[in-house]
Length: 362
Image 1 (cartoon, rainbow, N blue to C red):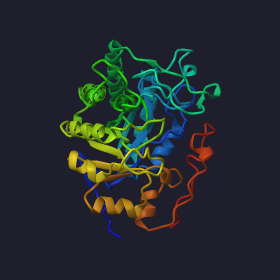
Image 2: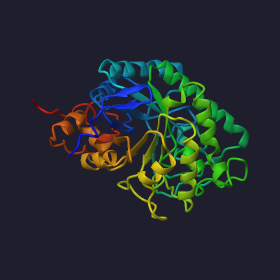
Image 3: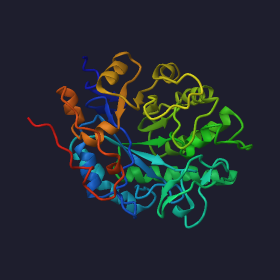
Image 4: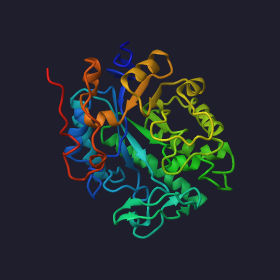
């Protein structure tokens, strides 16, 4: 086996000690106030041997909320709370980006004092129920955003990026994947608008482009990443024109000198089966900056992706939940701890299933 995965990597002006990335994963330990805390600082610092950490999705506004006890970054208090996390990670020599998130239609009126969630178009998620502050409730039809509201959402991203910088992060990732707001605008299945933000491939990209322009007034563009999921079905997405849409998006992103493009290329968590899956090879032909793969990778497949030149970085999610020392286990070709029980992934109970996994013994 090669050591490409564990080799150092220069991400523009950042020196990463390896090419292993802690994938952004919602863990729901921020409490009802949505504040980062000491438990979260322990969790991230335990995993800071990764070359890069990307935080769990963090909401940019109260309107963006849609997950119980996930963290936010839309008040000064929230920014101050995150400082203990960045300090802990930096104290171990780690590098950490914050993922910025708006849930869009993947939310519920109970998160918004009775007001409906918002989306590009008034199209509900086709599913049985979602988890809300009141327990399991049926999905609702969202309210379509007015054209004049969209500059305000762009500004919410900009202000969240400012607070992330105040909190000591090394950069930010824009979450434009997995059926959340920005992905909803990209997808013809969920975006049936007739204004300048819908109706064509270029128009569906417009909101993401405006968000990136705004965030890049706060951060140098090479400290701003983007996450896409062209093959995914999470939150009831998957559009017939996905190859044309995401090829166009990648071409536009290629002009922006971004930190990286983070592609959910794996099919481990579902594939819409509307054609041939888009691969890292496809994206490498369209995007010439740092490219990150994600979804279902194991050490061998990650090594192969990097050694072939198809990826520069690989993000690991579920294996990192139960193996805080995942990088060390890779280095020693050691057995991994079993994947944690799903009931612990989002548990608000604290340390159990979060920071209590065993490390390798010397």
